Amino acid sequence: MNTHTAFIRYTRFVLVFVFLVILAGGVVRTTQSGMGCPDWPRCFGRWVPPTDASQLPPYFEKYLKQQDIDHTFNAYHTWIEYINRLLGALLGVWIFIHTVWSFRKYSKTNRKIFWLSLLLLLATGFQGWLGKKVVDANLAVVKVTTHMLVALVIAAIPLIIIHLLKRQERLSNKRLKWLTLVTLLVLLAQIVLGTEVREQIDEIAKPLLYTRRETWIARLDHYFTLHKIMAWLVAVLCIGIFWLSLGYKQVQRKGVFILVSVLLTIAMGLILAGLNMPAFAQPAHLLMASLLVIQLLDVRLKIK
Image 1 (cartoon, rainbow, N blue to C red):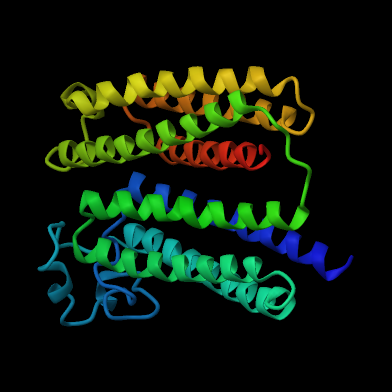
Image 2 (tube, one colour):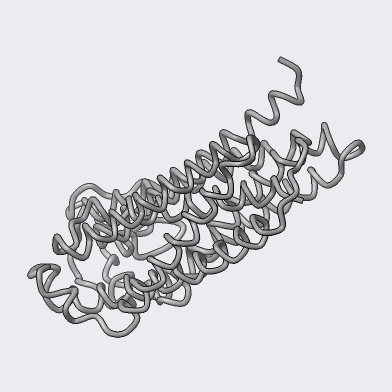
């Protein structure tokens, strides 16, 4: 295997790892573990978080008093949040290696690859800083939404790099080109709406101590209604992309993936709405929506 092929494979590995971190973030939100470590980058002032309340530092209340959370220690929440942070830090290491590698291999022959890799590293650093701000702001919805959108940018950059390096022939179809672009924009708006709905769920569930799940959906406002309407709009658009892709070998398989992804995303949404917000469906819903974004971008990059 030559170094060019090895670099493409490593870039794919980075892309997969980004989705692992997105999934871990979804688990954190689902289990209400976002403030399991109330300080950043350490956790209760330690690099290795405690496993028992007896291991807390004597001044641990200084962390909890500045947050609007229950002033008790929960090792389950703490370690879920800490593992999420470790995965994020590990992703930063992989991306740093990617940037160094791209500099050594492409800084003179294909500077666009190096600059994209550097942008990936900077975006990841910004995401880490934003993670601290999310903690400091006690999971403020605007910062959580921005955190999610930056994660999608981090996932998009390796895909763009792969496309540039493979230099595949791009097909020409204006209808598919614009339909894919419109679908991407609608889906991104849908994801932003989804973070707003998720914030409302948190506000509803917290006073109920995260019990009585059967009452949560009924208390949501017009954002949830709009979220449902846009979900079906995204589905219709994706079906259109699937239909148009059947005529082009370059994107046939991607069209099938898009169709399957949007159906699974809607299925997870229906499970959430119809089965009283089961915890397993929430990170799955987020992961499928994120994968759909990248698959749509993949198709878009294959079109002139």
